[in-house]
Image (cartoon, rainbow, N blue to C red; front, side):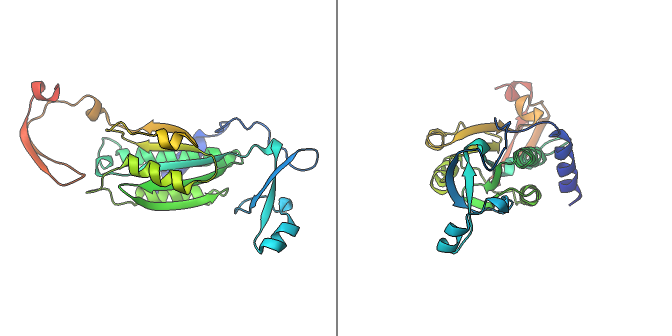
Length: 233
């Protein structure tokens, strides 16, 4: 819990004066073009509830105006055993920091925010909303996720979110990207951004002699002499 709190506090400080998206104006109400009705989401301005439609549908609906230009921001953490690595900070902590920054930036700008954790299948979901609690819930889910013996499947993630996300969104995928994923399907409907999280030792490995290494994604043990020649290959 202490590490989660530190990440959230750091993220809140970093986003002061910064915002995601091109939404400089958040004027609402009279004088602006009404463009759609959608279901109420926790955090919406209750003054924009359409009571007639709400009564007919038996669930709350709100009016969205053109000048609001409301953006839907989705962060996706690709969780694998390889994220349980790094010095002095594990890669999973960097992933959590990125989620916090994205979430606070979106909500601070009045936009919608949702989060997904993925490995080979969908592991966790924080539903779309506008409250800061969604950010802390997302970070907590990342930091407490089981990583060892899990592998990230980017293709499965893209196929799943393509089916689940009906509203056009800005999707920020966070992972180590040791494979080059095919995001073309997801990009047909959404704007997709990749945030690559790597440790320096992964980018520039150092020789450390004969040793045994364990693959954190499947538990396979690899023994060998990791000298200068071998790590440069």
